[in-house]
Image (cartoon, rainbow, N blue to C red; front, side, top):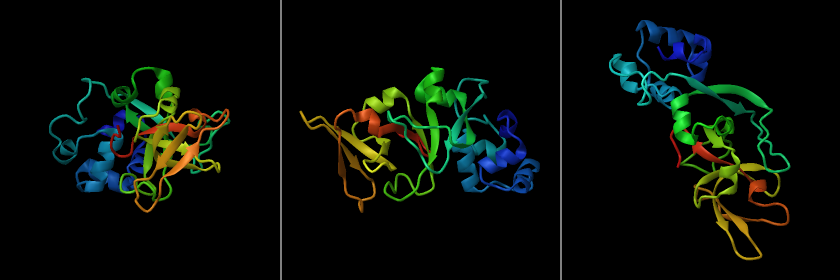
Length: 220
């Protein structure tokens, strides 16, 4: 059973996938069949194959190194994201931790422990990025220096706004001589693009807090 390898209690595991403990127990003893939404959460959070959940046949986990069922716990930030003076994401306010399979984390960011520790989860507020990211969905953000300093045109980032707020946007770096800026774009057509000028000591890494890598699915 996937929860046995997670290091979580049954209650904690049930909480992670958004169901009651009694419902989870019924899954274990075969009294109930998981709903599609539950299968999706098991797949996206723990990488458990839906086919295995329904039939008990084949491999429990999605393809990965044989026998590697280790988990890496990623912190979930409190509802209000805070940025430090150098643009770093302040992760002191942690509300919870969520397990991801270690092999998948390594596939995403490599084996460097410091790079892995730069990952955090943030719950999205607002609808500026629908349909790609919906309100109240949780995103996985890579806050490493490499991702903050090298803007990949059109990719999705966690961005500090000039007014101090934090939002999720697609970015393009405008390297116009003497007037560099970040072009900030939403996926929701109701929101217009806007420009963030990079002035003085407020460079790219002051505004860019990290790149979004996952929101129920991997994001390139």
